[in-house]
Image 1: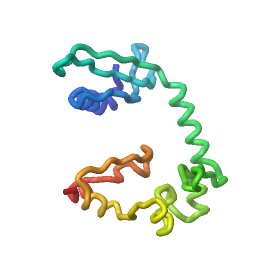
Image 2: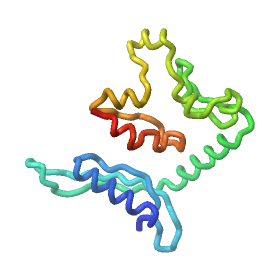
Image 3: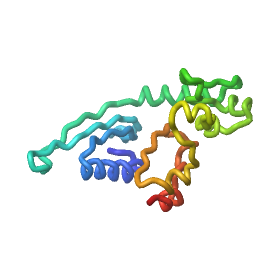
Image 4: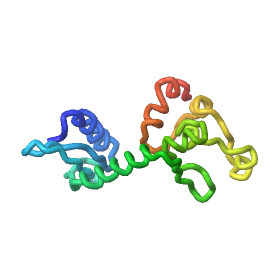
Length: 165
């Protein structure tokens, strides 16, 4: 049984995936018959016929509790470390930073992760630097690719969506 706290969201995501013809792939909690809570990765796709009518669904469910718990443990160690730690890409941009690094640099995690490019770097990459509000104001479609983190949760809200063309 899907954990009661996850049920509504998972059902909605599953329904959206079916309607849009996308593969459903999400991790969520289940409650086993013995009462234990486990994390599963659920992947399902709807197979349709020639005329788009749903024929059947196929997929799998995998217990990912151990990897989920390991990730949580590593995050706790990362977040609780007294030493500043940062992961950067080859260009020196921050991919992730821990709270001690934020304190060392005197900036929030989000500020470090979305550090703006210099004018010179922008020209080299042929990109235009704009604020988030201006991006939405000038766009008909925006695709956001950001890590799912507490600092990026609700980064885009109703106000930005109202600005879109």
